[in-house]
Image (cartoon, rainbow, N blue to C red; front, top):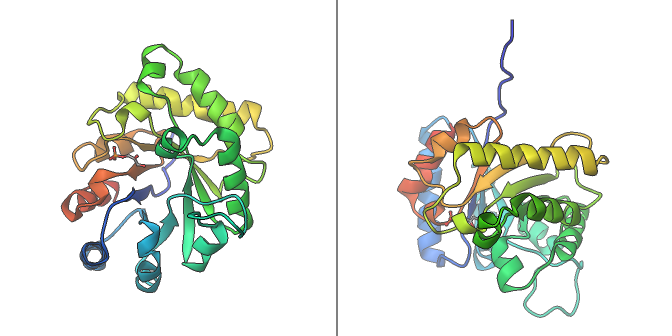
Length: 255
Ligand code: 13P
C-alpha cells in the first residue's frame, strides 16, 4: 500500500520585530499561556521578542512549552560592538533559537550572505538553532530571478556546521512581507522543492534535509492552507503574531 509519510508537527515562529512594550507583551504571553494550558497544541511554538523583553520572557517560558528566540545576533562571542548582541547572551537569556539573515536586516542593514553565514556558524557554537531567512524581492520575482537569488543565498548563508537539528530555512519572499500578498501553493511548493534540491546537490555535507518554513503575510485565515502544503514544515509570522486572536488562530490551524 502506498501510504503517505506523516508530516512531523509544524513549528510556528513569532517574529515580533521592533514591537511591544513590557506590559503589552506580558499580557499577550499570559493569554497565550492560558490558551495553551486549556488546549491540545500540536505544534512547536517559538517567540522571538525584542531583546528588551528577553529577560522577562526567560523567567516566564520554562514549563510552558514555548521556546524563545532572538531576532538577530553578532558573529563574535563578545567585545566592542556597540548596540549588538551575541549568541552567548541570547543563550544566557534562555533562547534556543535565533533568526539570522532576515530580509529587513539584509536590506536595511546591508547584511550579505557571508555575514549571515558567520552569524549562523557562531550561533551553532552556542547550541542555538538558527532560522536562516532567504527570499527574493519584488523586482527579482517579477524578473524571474527567484531561483538565482535563492541559490546564492543558500550557498553563502548556510555554514558548514548546519544540520537538521540546528538549522531551519525560512523562505520569506520580500514582496510578501507585510503586504497581504502570498505566493500561490504551486509557487511555494516549487521554491521549497528547489531549496531542498540545492541543499542536497550543492551542500552535500548536510546529511538530512533541513526543515523549511514559509513566512510573509501569514494570518489565521491562510495558515491552514499553507501548512497543508507537503513542503511547508512551519510558519514564520510577523504582524499576526502580535495579536492573540490572530496568533492563536494560526496555532490552532497548525494543531
Ligand atoms: P508579516 O507576517 O508581517 O508579513 O512578516 C513576516 C516576517 O517578516 C516574519 O519574519
